Image 1 (cartoon, rainbow, N blue to C red):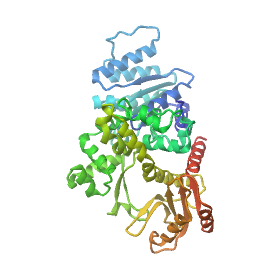
Image 2: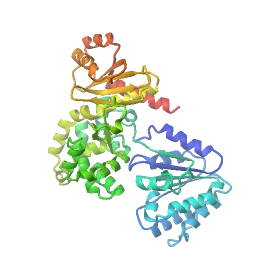
Image 3: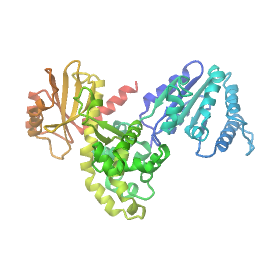
Image 4: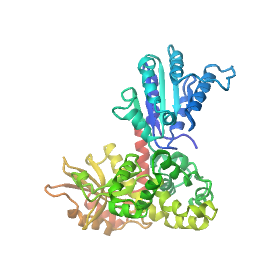
Length: 481
């Protein structure tokens, strides 16, 4: 598939390249999010050759030898490299980079360099020393990328990390927005693309598993629910690569995917003592896989006991809901029952999770575009014993609140949906103040005429899935300029 989106990231790379003096960029993000594709796509547009090396998960000696031989070949294009050649140390290798970058701009991309840091814990300090004493006075543009979040944190992001303060920029690469899928899957309609997004979460490698010349069902049968699909094994690899005791984390994710959202329920289902469960959940939150949600109207969410744990990574949510329970059959090639089950429940799964999340994201996006009546401080949802609201945005300072309802049914949304939300407004509003109230209703396809009439009386916004996608694409275009 063609390279799409990432205009903001490409602009940052070009800006750093054009600045005077040495630059050090820390680029990080989860596996398969597109870090390699981003830097190589950008590098191909340069006027001069750039040095690229991807670290592998091997011994420290092998890593230094592989790097040394790649660098030798880069500097001596027509000379055969001795297969035993290696610099004596990383200090010596960095000194060679400093020599080359002394009088010309040199782009150096060390991809998945966290694997080197994993093999040799002294490497971050060696880079710090090389940067402080040599490289920062050169013309190097050094890009270090990594997927291992814990190592990136300890090496570069924490206050006491060796590379803290040395990096001139750091960039976390996020999955692609739903709005970017239209360029990757142009032959699909919006509803088909939202189905793909539900399964992939915007991870480019997973999106590329789909052929938009075939239906969603055909893709499930031929490409997704198959023993060779990377999506079948990546969840386990993702957790094992980054975490100790991965089985406990998998048990927790499985518990949440099975409908357990309270702390005690997660602990019981996972078979982990309640006294220990919080530390595991904290790690999953730091990785961005899990989030603790509270009603958005609470002023101090960290103090609330009404927290609910949810899986925020769509791929992991899809994996633990549909793929993990059927791994044995899939690996044996018995995929018909799993495919049928998945296809039958996928639409409900979209309505329960993805459509509501995209609706909340839409509120944030149109707010940034300046098209919402107020600028929300927080966007989320609300629940209590008396009422539940899918989308809530609030600004405590201006005393404005938006209440939204999402309906994923195939039929046009009727007047009763509008009235029901209006009737429960008083059960949602925080006390002690008069609030200016705005309403928004989100439909898969359309609204009835009577719903439109009642919505107009209350100046409510009516948004379809097609408009959500259109506005997200518009946001991507505006962010690229």
